[in-house]
Length: 436
Image 1 (cartoon, helix red, strand yellow):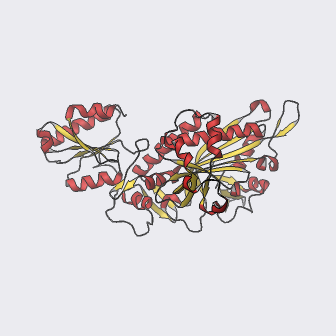
Image 2 (cartoon, one colour; image 1 turned 45 degrees about the horizontal axis):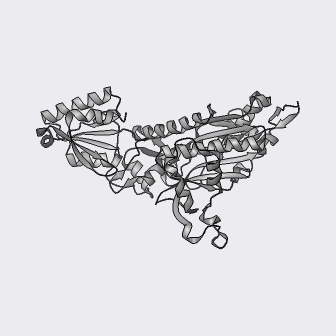
């Protein structure tokens, strides 16, 4: 993509309404624009990151055996009345009436709808277990939306729902998602601490939040240092059941639930860190299947109420969380797994024939090699080009300048480390083609 034609409305000044780093940088880097309180347009750069994160989430759900479907954003109030949650959910639910005076709502979650789908289509224990998920926009009418996409009213979520014959098998499904979450966050380059959590409005009696560590996090976490030994940012392979059991048994609590007087961890082994919640998993048994009559015929011919679980990841929230964990004074530092482009190609002197010829040649070759490249071909000063590249945070910068070309080299900059090196022009393609 050529920057001269790309829609990237960056800002030099920090917007006054932005209170945290991710909100400031997403606005300044031209990733989003607000249309009303807590509701944003995702601009091309932001949407590319959102889609990259979504794809990592999808791949790990598929790997865990979950099957993707897509449920609508608008739901019938009747289903929520049947489960008993319609009146209990509160003002966060956006309630609407259609032209036939039917009560509807903009879905904040999908337990009722997926339970209705299940009960109408699955009748036998032979069709269990089932893991079904979708990635869909949701709406919760927050009383005070803030912090950009971190706490907006409209947001993109991945929701998985499990259906099992008994508690033992339901726990197996829960652990599949537990592992899938660890792998997902590891692929995104994040350390995600599984924290024992309340089940809240979802219900149930087994739940974990996944909190990624970030200095600007909104929660304070207390956890056993033994968790660090699991190297949670590197768990990409299979994880055996004993490892899961050990990890789930270790102490990890949010500050409001941490009781220093009764903490089972010795003070010297207790770690304190800031975290941002990006995922939440629940096992809630028969809370919905009972009230909505979701039953299957068991091996003996009798009807059995299915055991259920719910597993959410805030896909759009992850964009902000990743920035909170990966930025410096100059801007964003994207992990390679989700970066909107892998390489920023900078033509330092657009009016210089050699610079432009070399830049154009590199750009075309990168495109043919499948390398995601953003080419700054604008006729503006080098300082502006460098500042923009640092702001939007692409992992690598390739700088083509007249002094380097006199020696037959270009400059390669690693955005995360700041390390620079010179490289022969004809070696650049091979360097990045291996990463494509």
